[in-house]
Image (cartoon, rainbow, N blue to C red; front, side, top):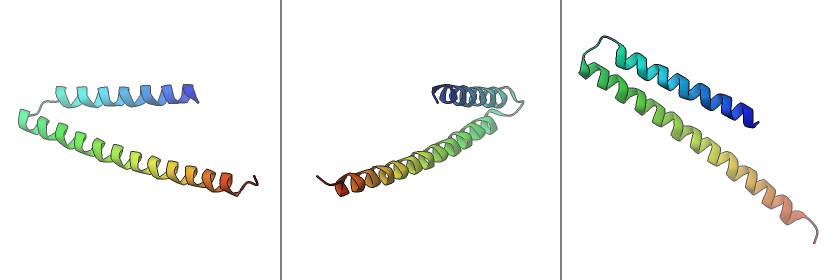
Length: 75
């Protein structure tokens, strides 16, 4: 699982670097380039927040199930 995480992180970093290079090297005005960067950052921020919220909900659900199971065990 560690290798999978490293591969995914590498892929994401590479994709972000490629996207940044593409935006910065594209022949466009500074105003349009800044708008594209801002829009990309806003989208990425929204997706990251959504992912964190999903992960948090899953973790709470898992921990509450474990607590219920532990509380139900005979002493």
